[in-house]
Length: 294
Image (cartoon, rainbow, N blue to C red):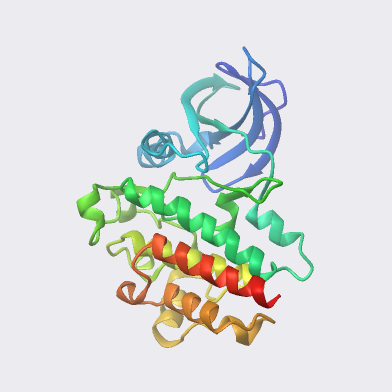
């Protein structure tokens, strides 16, 4: 199906404009018919609707959202199904964020990296919000710059919990099985996936810590720590190569940052920091040190 035209109606929502296309869904800006309140509408590609596993994966974001009530987690307020253009469309309505994604912010930088203080403060904020999700028993599993929004004040908002795993708190203290989706689907986005995801092994909160380390490395250097265009290539690299130090590939010269990023990107989960809360505190301390020496 081609993109929906402005003015198309999905139950109580109206399409205003097309935003982006993803692997399983497209995103539009829209508004509520009754109030004109702006929303983001995420619509499952109609050709995927017969695949129940993908429908479950898509609607998972709504159910996870009911578990996570936080000012910096993008709220998924509604889920529905509408008949339009001879197709039955599954959709999610979530809060509209006036701002840009972290990916868009990076693409607008010349060179494409952030100043160290700004990068550490943004990632500390991300870690604090993900720590809340972890405390609620939720692992994001797809943390990446495209899923982080920033407003004009650099406040961050985390979205797209569709691939998240929701376990119980006692399960999360060790390791939890990857969700039932992972047996047949590659769960996550390749450059940000930890080795345990690539191998369909167990995941826990440290899986998100690996992804956060990739994001921090990328914000500081403008590049990814690991290459590889397939899971097999990535696993081979992870098994035989250590990630480069931030100070070796960027102007950032800070031993504490080098060490923290290296720990986050450790191939073995037990070598990574113990929690997002620990990372938040470390990054806050690093940011203060960078400010003093600026």
